Image (cartoon, rainbow, N blue to C red; front, side, top):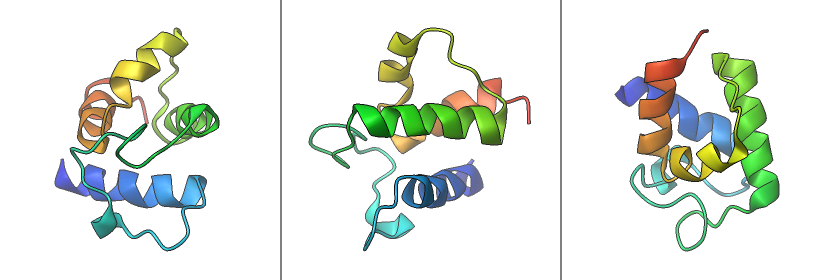
Length: 85
């Protein structure tokens, strides 16, 4: 699971072009939106594409994303349970 968390942090940084951010800078339990990493709705769409492309996970209901994208840890748990790739 730790490997998946590190990989997700790297993918988030790459996909969202987070300059000057390293995987170590991202707290796996911190919120991805709002006070935590400060992502926005456009970033959420990028994360949905990343999940589909890299892990074969399609979100049928965008509202699901709100719960899944709480933190890197929650996202990693979801991917581990639902991935098809």
